Length: 386
Image (tube, rainbow, N blue to C red; front, side, top):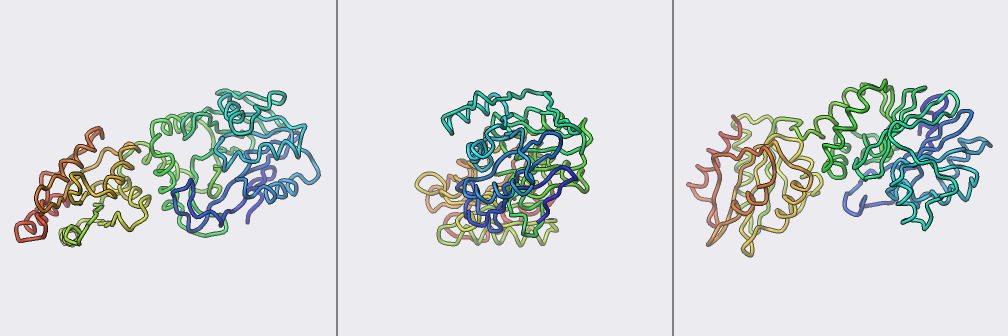
């Protein structure tokens, strides 16, 4: 694994193949990395720590990089425990070091550790700088990307942006995989609610000459940075990334599933560029949410259930709305044996979502598909493919 980011910046992070659910909900089949960096200069700065499960490995990585020297600063950009858990262990190991962080981060340290390290605080504000020698670090406030205390750091000498959780992804660094897929799932699941704040941070960094981005999860980015920046701009402005239709369904006895599958075939027959089908009871919910934000149109198909909608559909729509779902075309398939109300309920759940265009056609099933339903499915497919 790569340890030299530049001549002066060393990687001292760790790979986690132990955790099965990141943040207690996101499956990480290829693990996750907790990144930490050291800037070696006349003075030495360590950028963040790692998860508590990897204390000894991180301290050894740090010792190897320091090569007999002692760090002057620990810069804490983000206080989530996967990055801050080893602050106390760091201070125990290097008692002369100072801690540089935002004022809100020190409040959180008091909450986590019972101390705010008052005797070694350097409180960082927007635009503050810290000179290490050749390297001058400039700090930018990034509140709610995705916690309120977050700062990011720009090194003007090596032209590196240390981006905290921004530009992160699931997946350990010893696994090769497509960046965008797991970065998209990471962004939408964890940061997606805070698109406005991400947009503000992108505007702040637009004036900087950035040659490398060093996130707290995922690989260092250094080639074709425009690709990553453009994706972040699309995601944080809630624009569809691609034209296509997502069908998200739940089905009790299989009849709603049959309608969803019939619609998928009709969409393909009508030339729809991309059709994605998710069974919400069985798929990874985070993947389904990712698809909903990736593509331009979505069909929600479910049953009326206990006077409401099927629980997995309710959960799915809650995930969408709490992350600011908007700017999409939405259609409904509802099923019910005596009083179908699912479409009305789903539409009601989306009432606060902005810039939603509802399809003129919908599908209403009374227990099982019939010729009338098939006509509705064909009409909906034609409309969604226009």
